[in-house]
Image 1: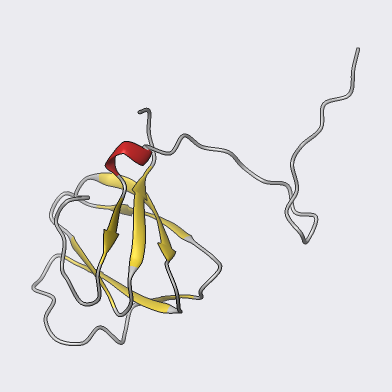
Image 2: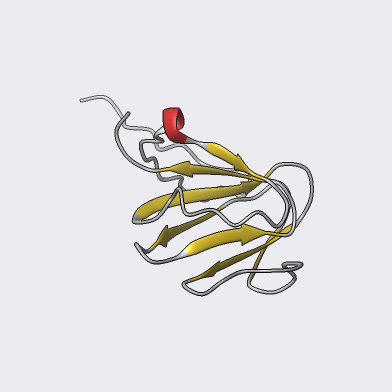
Amino acid sequence: MGAVKIAQDVYNNNMQFAHLDTDNAANLTTTASSTAFQGKHVVITPVSEDAWVQISSGTITGTVNTGKLIPFGSSYTTIIRSDEKIASSANVNVCPLGEQ
């Protein structure tokens, strides 16, 4: 039998793979609140700088400067529940997981 290789990141951590539904990915612009990803498992990636991301079932207004800090060059995977909205302090790409 042949050996099975597992992909690793630059720190030699084993990587996990998932299907990205890139057809339904979108850029979320600064402080815009979006309901487009409700009820979905998503990957959030800052586009050009560190981003604070706030996910809330309430109204999100003003400057987003609390929540989850996602450093530029990394990503964050989470579930946006059916009654939640997402907003960010900087432009982020939001890509649902799932089949295309």
